[in-house]
Structures are given as C-alpha cells and as structure tokens.
Image 1 (tube, rainbow, N blue to C red):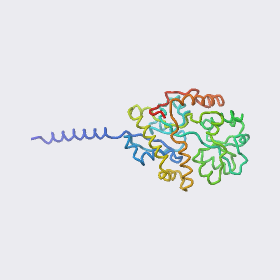
Image 2: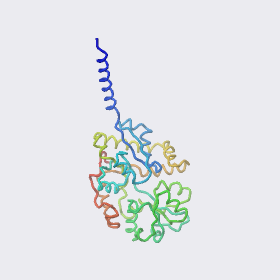
Image 3: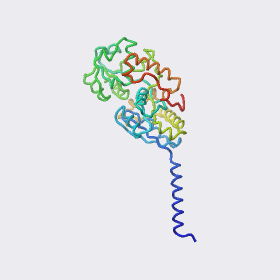
Length: 328
C-alpha cells in the first residue's frame, strides 16, 4: 500500500508537470503601446476582434499612452513591446542606446497644412510671413515641410514665418481663435473640422514631397519593436508580420468595424466615419522593403542639407535598425 506521504509527493510532481505544460502552452504576449485618442488602436483592436492573435499564437495586450514620444520611454522600460514611430526617431533612439528596431510599416505620409475656410492662404507660398502652428520643429513632418518648401518655393518656412508650437488639439483651438494663420496638423485632428467647413486644406506632406521630388514611399511610420521580444520569440517575427498584414486586410475590407474604431476617438456621424475610414485605408500598411532604404537615405540627405544634422539628429540610415521578416 502506498503511504499518504508518497501520494502527496506524486500529487506535487503531477501538479508541477501540469503547470509546466500550461506555461509552455500559453501564447507569448506582445503589448501594443498606442495613443488611443489618435486612432492608433485600430490595428490591435482589429487583431482582437477577428481572433488573429489566437490564430497566430500571439496574445495581444493594448497599453494606452498620452503623448507622442512617450512610447520610447515605455519601450526602454519594458512597459510595452511594440509601438508606432517614425524612422528618424527610431534612429535617434538607437543612437541613444535603445535596443529597438522597425519590423513593419505602420502608415504613410499625408498630414495636412490647414487654415480657416475664409483665409487668403491658398498655397504654401502664402505661408511666408504668417503665423504657422506646428507640433515641433524636430518632428519628421516639419523637417520635410521645411526642406520641400525650400526646394519648391525657395522659402524657408522656419525662418520666414512666425512659428507657434502646440499639441495637435491646441493647434485647432489656436486656428479657430485666429492666433495662428495656418497649422501643420495630424490628419485625425482635421477630418471633422474640414468636413464641417471649419478648416480647409492648403496642402499636405505627401503632395509637397511629390512636388519636391522626394519619394513619398520612403520610410515614415513603422511598428517599432523591442529587440528583447524578438530575441525571446525568434520564430514569431514572421508570424507577427503575417498577423499585421491580415489585420490590415480586414481593416481595408470590413466597413462594419470602423464605427466601433472611430467611436473611440469621438467620431460617430456616418459621413465622418466614412471619411476617416477612407483616409486611414489610403495610408495604412505602406510598403516596407529593403529596396526603400536608399530612397529613404536620399530623403535624409535632403533634410540634412536644409536643416542640418543637429536638427535632424541622424545623417545616415542604419540598416541594422530595420527587420524585414516579410518584405512587401
């Protein structure tokens, strides 16, 4: 007969084995850092909605944060595993010691310069001598606007306009009160006022790039991931990229999901939902391939030639900063 102590020992062994199996069976978790109020939660929300995390064996968590730039603190401190950011900030952060890399395209260029509907500003050249709002002169969008303006119109907007900096929601208020004449703005903040006739678009970053001869398919916003996550899950980089592609495909084809997504940022009117949806679809999941590195380097060269290396923060593209598990 087996004694109670033996049975108890067997139970502990079996319990430990089951616990070990459960731990092995659990899907690796990836924490998406997003600014929910700006629509960055669209992709991870779609992943959860369609069960793509379960399909690809990657558990999703969504971590909301408040302001641009905060994602790098979260990535450095292991509070999130992946977040959106532009390639210049990625390179700046890596130079400062952050162990992060781009892994997938996030969104393409297109943020607009807006003004009031009755403004006499109708082209970029009209911004000379005006009060121009922006969200920071070291942001990639501003650097491109400045370089393109120099190349197309021989206007250095940073020197030939009065600059007023502010957070994107504040820029809309400043424009409405007449405290700025125009503003470079994030598109999600302009969809509603433009459709309601409260703002008009003067031009946008992509149009300026086309006019200046900059390749608008150059890298812009990426999903940026902690190297430690990739190292801990070496077989999942391709699966992660495939999951992102499938989620973007759902966002391109399923109209029913969008009212839920836009409600998170305060857009509920059907016409505004459709406008926001179409805008996002036109920019999501941009090309992300190694052959775009030289074109992106050419863009960096143009930015440095106008603003200087100190303002841009980098001079050369670091190819090691980009993972290409699925080049597309």
